[in-house]
Image (tube, rainbow, N blue to C red; front, side, top):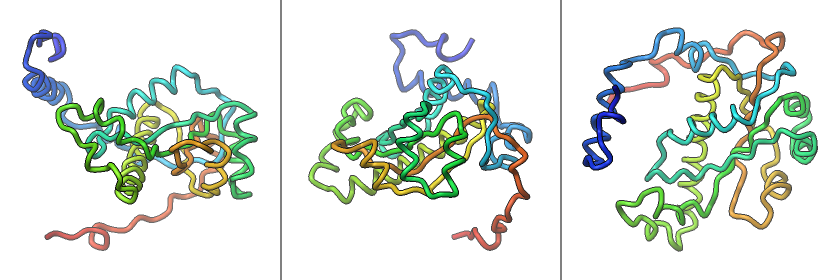
Length: 222
C-alpha cells in the first residue's frame, strides 16, 4: 500500500506529501544502468524514422509525465503543439532549414515546444499558497527570461519522458522561429522555443556518438 492510499483525504497535505516521497524512495532508490542508458547515457538523437505510428493516447501520457517535471515557482510556461497531420507538417515546412525538412516530414510527430508569455497569469492555480503575480506584472524582460528558461527545461523533461516510454527523439533548433510563430501563434502570447521529433527511429541513419567534455574540463568545485 503506498502513501496515496495510506493517507485519508483529511490528512495534512504536507505530511501526506512527505509520506509519499518516503514511500517512493522505499520502492525505488535509483535507476538501473540499463534505465540510465535508455534515457541518457546510451540514448541518441535521431534523424530518420520508421512508419510505426505514435498514438494520441501515448502523447497524452507523454504530457502527463512531462508536466510533473520541476519549473521555477511551478510556472509551467511551456505549451506543446503536436504536429501529426500532413497539413500541419506542410504548414511547418517553410520555416525549416533545407536539411531538416525530411527529418520533420518523416517523423510521426513533431512537437513545437513553445513558451506562453502570459504563463504568470496562471500562478494563482499553479502556485496557490502565495501570490507571485506581482513579481511579473509589468516586467516583460523578467517574463521572457523566466518563460524561456523553464519552457526549455520542460522540453528536456519531455525528451526524458519520451525515451522512458520507449519512444525516440530528435530535438531540433534548425528553423526560423519567427516563421513558426507567424504560422502557428500569430495574435497569441505564445513563442516557439525548439522542435522535437518523436517516433520510432530508423537506426540506419545513426553515426558514431560525438565526444562529450570530460569532468575536469566542464566541472569544478567551489
